[in-house]
Image: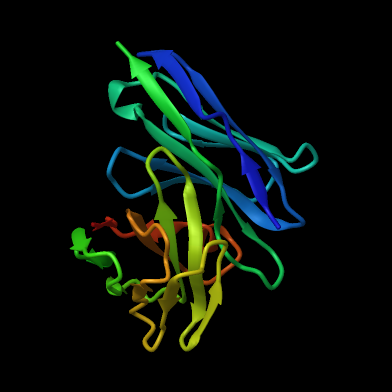
Length: 111
Length: 116
């Protein structure tokens, strides 16, 4: 099976940089994805890492290290609108192709 | 515009009644998923389907049923056997593939089901 662990809450101030970690246990997967969900809304896709290393998309970057079973989402120049829940997810390889999500990290950005 | 649509947004039902949540997509995606989300919690997989006329149980399938008669549609029925059905239900679709396209899930806006 698959399991993904994330911190439940992170708090930072506007303009700061925050890192949200995701550690996982899975027998094999195609890559690690990140999603953002505002209260009461639908999750939206942020980024995807198929290979080890850093992927940058504007203020957001995502990192994957398969050897360490670890990834993170880095948010720079935090804005109030970044307050949301952030989920990591994997799509396992093999016959079981379900998309599995972590438990989510609630980010609160303070003024 | 392509997208994934869930209806209704809010749904109230009496205990013991079955209820069906609609999910339609026009993205031409092969894979579709149903998740349940409880307040302050993550997304738990109920059922998923990789192809028409085929679906698999997820982690919390008990008390739920699905069908996949058309590529565009993946309705979820919450039966009276589900002990605690009040939750936020999210439907998602994913393009077939192992690259980034196969990893990006598109979600509907969700249905908030309240059973009284």
